[in-house]
Amino acid sequence: MATIDLGKIKQVWRGTYNNGTAYTVDDLVEYTDSNITSTYICVANSTGNAPSSSGTAHASWNYVAKGVVDPIPSQSGNTGKFLKTDGTNLSFDQAGKLLSINQSVKTGMQTIASSAWIDIHQMSVTVTPQLSNSKFLIQVRGFGAPVGGVYFMANKLVKVVGGSTSDFADMSGANGNRFGSHCTIGTSNAQYSGVPVYAISFDVIHQVSSTAAITFKVQSKQGYGGNHAIYWNSSDRVYTHNSSECGISTSTITVTEYTS
Image 1 (cartoon, rainbow, N blue to C red):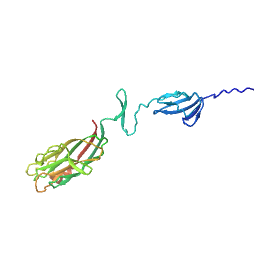
Image 2 (cartoon, rainbow, N blue to C red):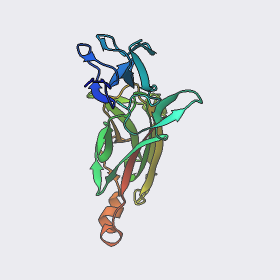
Image 3 (tube, rainbow, N blue to C red):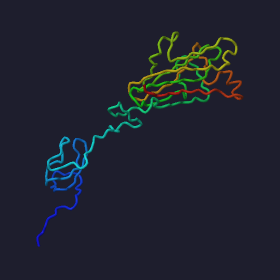
Image 4 (cartoon, one colour):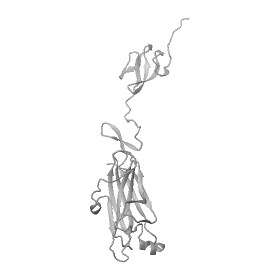
């Protein structure tokens, strides 16, 4: 009886194309050409002939399902970002303008008796910028007072980067003419003039140029000779005569990171 070779009665999946494998008609393979993965069918016995090159199929192969370029760009390094289009191309961008909010709350009274700048406990925030060009809004909201014989209490914001402390760019002028990230409160030299607790409030905007950690902190000093006391969250009279009835104030420093 004569034998009739019908060949393959169905297509055969051979997996990812291997340059050293001998393929026969109706073999199916997967192959990535120019970063585009497609499926091919062998139409002529072939060994060592890649299914396609630069998007053109080899004579031994036909496309079964031709892939397309992935329209989504690489997600590596884009955590928290959103995908946007300019009408032609897709790209990742920051998800919104607000990147982070950090706050430190100062509780309890702090007394300072120095004409040198002294760090205020709990009035500092350390952040690592999410972007090398992030902007920061630093808001100082506090309460304090000089004692009656001191007259003045000076308060300023400084930054610490890499262990080095410095004033902000907007701070200028010597002690008597200072302005910028600074707030001064004062009293007259009358009896009990230090009784009120005064608001200490100022805002500073700062833009970084790297992602190095940065600390924003408040410093204070008294503005008269003799190392008299100044107070945070209270005054001498409020603390001595009224703190047990009404308590003392609470101060905060809030640092908001955002992008333009």
